[in-house]
Amino acid sequence: MINEELVLRARDGDREAFVDLMRQTEDALHGMAWSMLRKEEDVADAMQETVFKAYRSIASLRAPAFFRTWIFRILINECHTLLRGRSRTVTMADFPAAASKSSDYDEVDMRDAVDRLEEKQRVVVILHYFEDLSIAQVAETLELTESAVKTRLMRARAALMKKFQFHKKGSMNYESI
Image (cartoon, rainbow, N blue to C red):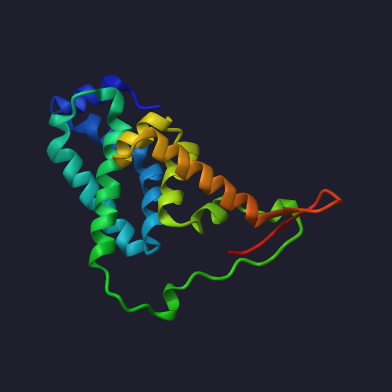
């Protein structure tokens, strides 16, 4: 959880407080950027631009309680900017490796399954379930209505359930996308 006092200090110009905030959110931001961009160099660019823009404009943050929502919004906008700028050509290295089929429950990787969802569903799942943002915060971050967020979550859960097939013996079979 983000310390609101730290946000207030950063907003008032305390550089160390800002650095502490970035350290606290770095892993979460990196995970979100990776799920959208899938290229480490693009992730690094998005992270750098996000930190720069956040530092420049943190004084405009009105409510410290919404720091995580605000910083994720900046990151998502940066990721969309990078995605728009990408070349239309696709190299073989850009294709994800196919997931191996496994009947062993312990080898099922939920994050991998989530990463294979379409972007609109993937982003809401990551923000809501992995980053623990409320439906309202996700809606604000993505500039959607709460009902749109709920719909995307419902569709994402349905898509994930299709990927996991349960068998009579109680084992699970992960079906690649």
